[in-house]
Length: 307
Figure 1: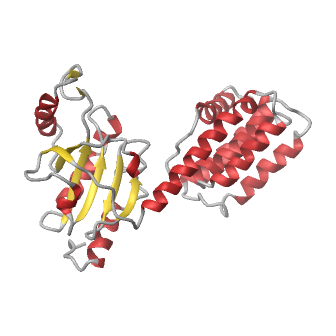
Figure 2: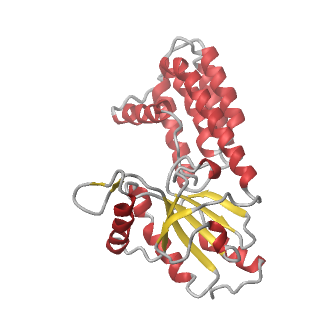
């Protein structure tokens, strides 16, 4: 199942509203919130079972439409939420931005006086932004990986990304203040162990942040003192058992050239310097990172680890 990434507070808040309504025991015939909550519950069960395609969820999509028809005479927030949940399914599970945008326009037209209807324009802007981001990422794949220049690296001699050409390069964009980044360290450490002695280089890419988190009890202020920030990175790596290369890039960690909107953000580069995979989460169970790396090693006739 894909990770859910609500684009605005609207989608997240409505999900909480549904949960709260069910907890209050509002279920009953003729209650749009209760009926929607029951439908959302069924969808969640399917998603947990890995049924996340439009084909698997076709009956549920039809159920959204049936509810909208049933309550078509009511232009309330509760009925508008039915449409919001349908569009969020297209947005977050199918990542079908075209359909999600169409449904958002419908929300604005059909429910203009409701809370969701008033938020529709903002949601539409977010959807269009996500669609543009996805298009940028799609164009990156198969093209030369954007350049990276390193001001400091824990590995001697690493100055640019091109220094690693000829290897499969795994870039993990991160920062010390990012909890999910640190939580994913065990998965990265496992990759390091798997590819010891192979033509695979794993690099944790960060940039100067002006503070170091998760090292001492309180954040360490290093604004204007990059040398101190570099020194503390060595201590941070020791504390968190970081066994792979860490490098500070001249480019910001939220690097627009890599279309990074959040971290951790993992990208995999082939030995010929082309970007092959991007926007991966190291801890996402649906992503077989080692499988992607092994495929590239095989493509370039490089030694692979035994299964």
